[in-house]
Image (tube, rainbow, N blue to C red; front, side, top):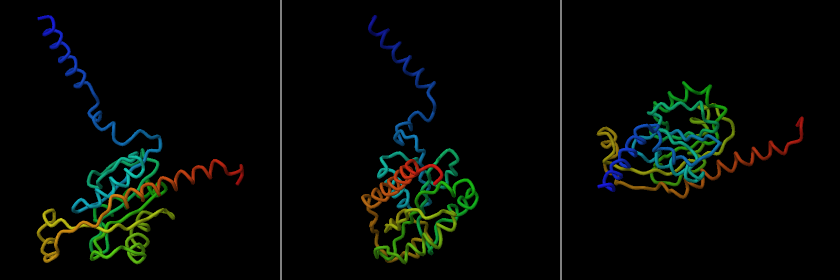
Length: 208
């Protein structure tokens, strides 16, 4: 009987403790602890850019929060921001573009990397796609300086498409050319660029 009473007390105590926890407690293990305050913002239609964003954070050691633009996140508390979007008709989603335009003055000096995800008729993206999607679209939209950028190949999942898009894509089978390793390598590249820049600033002689 004593053991049963102790078990009940323990259970009630745990329940009460959980009730008092911050609702965000379950998310405290992601991202990994860091004082750098990173965020990856993305716009996606069928999830490929979401996965790219998560893998970019993984390449950084998991230190970045990852947000779908439809969450309308407050990025003011972040020091470093990476932005990317899926491409259709040579542009990212309208809601991503509107978010950037509305918040440009708050985030343009914090942008550390830009990326796009595009099927590109299953051909490997090259300099032409980087110029079209990054240099002539995302970079001017964000007002960012010279930051690392990448265009990743995409994928098609017909079951996730709206009927109009599925009709346009009729005859094209599902495929997946997006590679986790490529996205992780890009995250590592961005983080290294920021660390190197910080080290250079610390080592610069006063007045230089």
